[in-house]
Structure formats: structure tokens, C-alpha cells
Length: 251
Image (cartoon, rainbow, N blue to C red; front, side):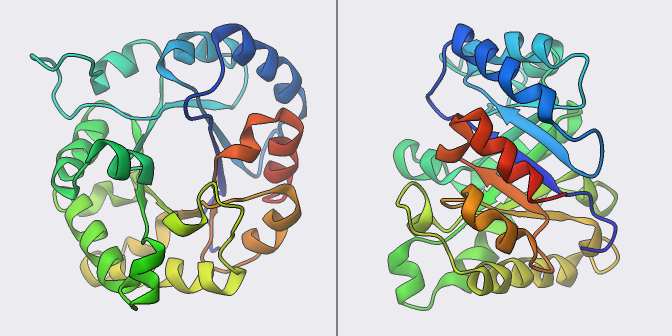
């Protein structure tokens, strides 16, 4: 993967109280490799501060699972990038398929969120991916092109390497189905080609993750693919031992 440091992210989704998050970190952190891989944990909003504190003396970074594009305003229930940065959060997941599917998040909103995250010094993890129906109708490349082009439309060339892309085929999320390593590599390589169309000098520096039923028993083969630079892990990341085994697959 050239000189790109692999990134392994644990997306806890709507799981774990503060106490549960602290217990998880107590088991997980002692086994985190000191180098060779970047580890990100994405707790729910209520556990962010506790996780920032718990990881303060480690190399593990904490990410939020969403944010609003505005710095402030009449947006009940939302959280802004500066608010996240203030408490020590260093990254944010944007455009996860569950946000798109259940909460109607649009590419146009992500076009605003990605640069807002960058302005606040957050690492944006932009999620893209097709549904099962879109794959069956051979629309995968069309969908990825739209999501990448709109999601990065306001990102300058010199900021591109500060963005992480996560390819997560929706048909493989939480279903137990995983894209075959060759399928995942094909889609991720296409994303890198899309980046190279606009950013020919920077595309090789962008880390592109795979997400979709990643588990300890398939992580090594997925991470061995040339263009896959890590994983965005959902269900399997809820167990500290399972996530530790997945992280080890990237080292």
C-alpha cells in the first residue's frame, strides 16, 4: 500500500454506556501495537469524553460518528466540529450508510461536512458504497463516482491526503455477507482511479478502508489487497478481543 499507514476503526454505533466503554478500553488498550497501524475508536456521543480521557496516554484516536456542517445555529440535536475538537475528538465518520438510509443524509450535505471537519482539524472518514440492488444492476461505479465527486467537491488538492475514504457495500453491512477480497479490491481500486482523475498527484496518498462484516477470520485476506488500507469495523469491533485480532491483521 505504498507508504500509507493502515487505519483500523471501530464503529460502535448505538452501543456502550460510559461504563461499558471504559471497561472495553481497559481490555483493549494494553494489546494495541505501538506502531505500524493507526487505531480509531468511534463511540456514541455520550462516551466520547470518557474515551478521549481513557486513550490520552495512548496512540488510539477517538472519532465521532457524525456531526453537523455548521459551527453553531438553530439545529436541535446536532453537534458541530468545533464542539468535538474542544473535547479532544480527532476524527469523525461522515456519510455512513445507516445515516444515509435511516436519516436521509445526502451527498450535498456531505459536501459541506467534509470541509467543515477539515477546518476544525478533524480527520474526516467519508463513507461510500452501493446497495445490493445497485450492484445487481451494475450501478456500483456510477454510485461511487457520484458519492466521491460530491463528497469531495470542496476539498482542495493539498487537503486530500487528510481525508480517509471508507468503502462499505451496503449489502455487506451487518448481514454477515462480506465482499470477496477481489470484489473489495476492485471497488477500492476504482475509487482510487476516481481520485486520480481530479487529484493525480495526491490520490496515491489517500487511505481507503473497507467496511462490511469484517471479522477476525477474514481481516487478514482483506488487508492483503493492494489498495485496501484498513477497515471500518462494525459489529466485530464491539468485542475488544475480536477488534484486537482485526487490528493485528493490518500489522
